[in-house]
Length: 92
Image 1 (spheres, rainbow, N blue to C red):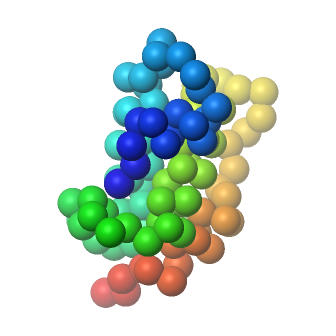
Image 2: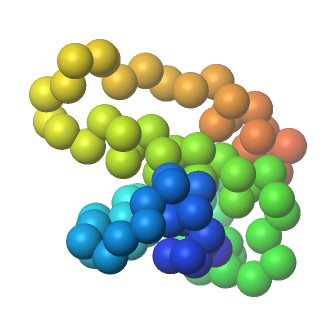
Image 3: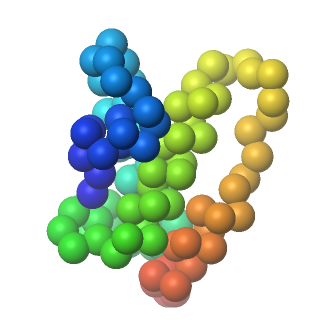
């Protein structure tokens, strides 16, 4: 769903030192989006609507910014993440 290049641009990272970390966060964000949408992550590969990609980038940014296990600020749920995904959510 996300490419390393677009994710690094979103994060404003211009070095390769943290590529493995960023790729892991991309995988985590894709899984979190799929989980919230109640669909398999494999369905988030081709022709993903822009709001879903934006939600994934938003989550990657939050996880990247707060990547230390103990930070100065507590991790809070972002209502924008849910607002972007809600129209695409599959209800069982």
